[in-house]
Length: 123
Image 1 (cartoon, rainbow, N blue to C red):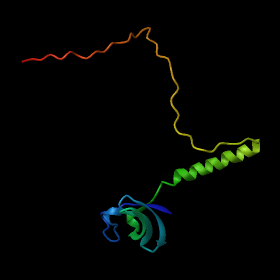
Image 2 (cartoon, rainbow, N blue to C red; image 1 turned 45 degrees about the horizontal axis):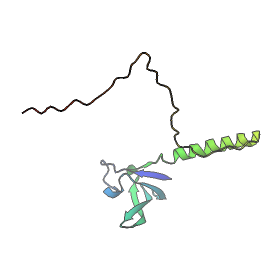
Image 3 (tube, one colour; image 1 turned 30 degrees about the vertical axis):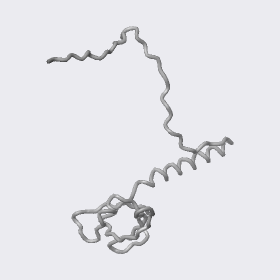
Image 4 (tube, helix red, strand yellow; image 1 turned 90 degrees about the horizontal axis):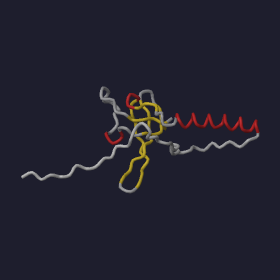
């Protein structure tokens, strides 16, 4: 599972170092009171997978994978419907498209002309 690391101040045992607060990692070991988490740490130019042990009070299940799993489920459903109808379904995500153009009418609202105020030097 993927978990978010968040140090809980009321529990000092098994607390993560301040570097790992807010990081996301993958659980590799579970004990009665703690979990082992693999977290990527950037050291100079390279990324090192670090294995840290934290108490369960300092981790929470991450929601980062939830939207992905929902999308996979929806895509599978759309593909199944497409196979039944015999059409190819595009499952790729589309970026936000530009909004459609529209016409601005000035019949009742005349345009207001703006001009800068001339600078006056007061001595």
